[in-house]
Amino acid sequence: MDNLVWVQELIQAPDLKALGTVLDARLRAYVERSLPTDEWTLAERCAFEHEVRRFLARAQERGYSYPMHFPKMPTLRVEFVNQNKAAETSIAA
Image (cartoon, rainbow, N blue to C red; front, side):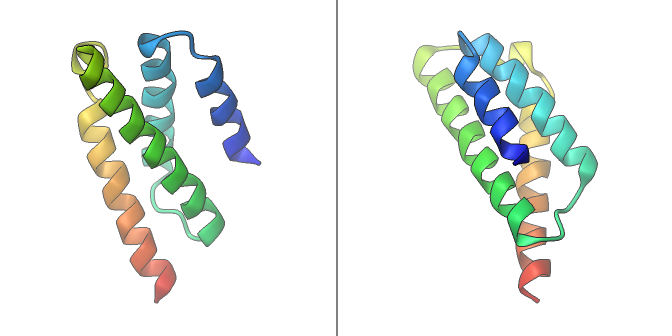
């Protein structure tokens, strides 16, 4: 259910700046929560990870310099992905 909120926020974002604002805030929240402990939460995070990748690809295609607007996003994204990988290993064990 939690993922429906961010999906709606992404749909309603009128441009890349608004979309980046949503993604940046959610990335911060996910990273602060640390590793997910169950498959459901991990699946939600993996779906969100996909949306972040789509945003980065769209930003690059359109020449939108997202690091100028969201300077912590690249670092947050790496930390987020690393948390997801660690959670996959932990949950599978």
